[in-house]
Amino acid sequence: MKYMIMTFGSAEAGLAAMGREWMLEMIQFMRKLDDDLTKSGELVSNEGLADGSQAKTVRFQNGIAVSTDGPFAEAKESLVGYWIVDVENEKRAIEIASRIVAFVKAPIEVRRVMDAPPEF
Amino acid sequence: MRRHGQFDACEDAVQEALLAATLQWPKTGAPGNPRSWLIAVASRRLVDEWRSQSARRRREETAIALELPVQEITAHDDTLTLLFLCCHPSLSVPSQLALTLRAVGGLTTAEIANAFLVPEATMAQRISRAKQSIKSAGMRFDLPPEPERAERLLVVLHVLYLIFNEGYTTSSGPSVHRTDLTAEAIRLTRLLLLLAPGEGEVAGLLALMLLTDARRAARTDADGSLIPLDEQRRDLWNAAQISEGVALLTRTLGKMPVGPYQLQAAIAAVHDEAPNAQATDWPQILALYEVLERVSPGPVVTLNRAVAVAMVHGPRAGLALLGTLDQDERMAHNHRLDAVRGHLLELAGEPVAARESYLRAARMTASLPEQRYLALRAARLN
Image (tube, rainbow over all chains, first blue to last red; front, side, top):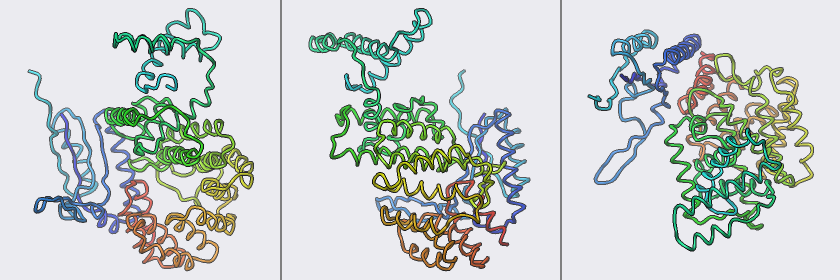
C-alpha cells in the first residue's frame, strides 16, 4: 500500500535559524534516508518544493480565475516536501515518518494514497 | 523520411528493417553496404505497409513508383535536415528537445523520460504531439532555404545548448548533473560541426560545452554539494577536454564572424587555463564580457560582467553595476541576482547584508543543491 509522507514549514525560518553543522547533518540525513528507501525498494518518488514565498495561489473569484502571490496555507503550514512510499502496512509508513520527525522535529503527515479497486 | 515524408511510418519501417537485420545478418553476414541495405529494406517495409493499409489504386501506383534502385544517400545532408526539422521554430521548446534526442540522438523514449525526470507516458505524448505538429503543419523534409538557414541554425544551437544545460545544471530534482544528457549534447554538437564545418558558432558551442563539462568532476563533493569555481580542485579538471576546447577556439576565433557561443567559450577557456583561482586573468574576462554584452546584451550577461568588474575594480564597483538590474523585470524571479550580490557583499566585508542576500537567493531557487549551497554560505556568516 502506498503512503504519502509530508513535511511542512517554511524554508525561510529553517534556513535562517539553522547553523552550518545542522544543515550539513540534515543533508547527510536526507541522503541516507533516500538511499535506504531506494535499497529497500519502498521509495516510489520524493520531491522537495521550492519555498512557499515563491508560490502563487489561484482562486475563482466573481467568475474569473485570479492569481495572488504566496501559498494557500499559512507559510509555516505550507507543504515543503514529500515522499511516496510503497510499504507493507501503515505501521511501516509510520516507522519511516518517525525517523524523519526525530530529525526535523516538526509534525509529519502520513496519508494513504488511494488504490485501484480490489481485484476480488 | 526525405523520400517518403511520413515521420511515424518511416520510424516504424526503419525499426523493422533493423529487426530484420539482427535476424538476418548473423546468418548471412552483413551486406557490403549496410546503410543502403537498411534503407532498401525499410523502404520495402513502408511500401508493404501502405499496400496493406489501402487498396486504393493511386497508392498502389505511388508504391510501385517508389521501388527504385537504392542510390547512395549522403548521410550528412539527411542528418542535418533532420536536425532542422526537429528544431523547427513552430514546435515548443520541450518538444524540440525531446524530438531531437529521439530522432537524431536515437535515445529511447524511456531514456529521454528518465533524463527529464518525467513518466514515460508523458514523454511519449510529448514526442507524438511534436510529430503530429510536423505532420499537420505540412513541414517538409528539406533543408531550410538559404535566407532562413542562419536563423534556423541558431534554433538548432539553442536546442543543443539547452540539452547540455539540462544535464549540467538540472533545472529541477535532487542531483546536479545528468551526465547522459551532457554527453549526448556534446555528441550531437560534434556531429553538427562535421555537417557544418564553416560555422563559427557551432565550433564555439562545442568548445563551450567541452570547456564547461571539463570541470564536472570538481564541481561537486562526495555528498553532491556544489563547489564554487574558486574552491574547485583543478587537478580534477579534464585536461584532454580543455585542450580540445582551446584548440577548437584557436581555430575559430578571429577567422569566422564572432558570436555569443564563441565568446562564452573564450571566457570558460580563460578560467580553465588558470593554474589556480588567484591566477585568473580577470581583466581578460572583463574585456570578453564587454564584447559579449555588445554582441548579445541581456541581464544575465550584465550579472556576470558585474562579477568580473568586482574582481578587476573591487566589490563596490561590481555592486554598483548589480544595482542597475534591480528594476529589471526579467531578473525579478531570478535567484542569481541575490546570490551574486551576497558574494560581492561578502567580499566587501559586509557579512550581515551578505547573509540576507544569500538567504533571499536560497528561498528563490528551485534547485535543491543550489539552495543548500546558498544556505550554507549564509550559515557560514552567522
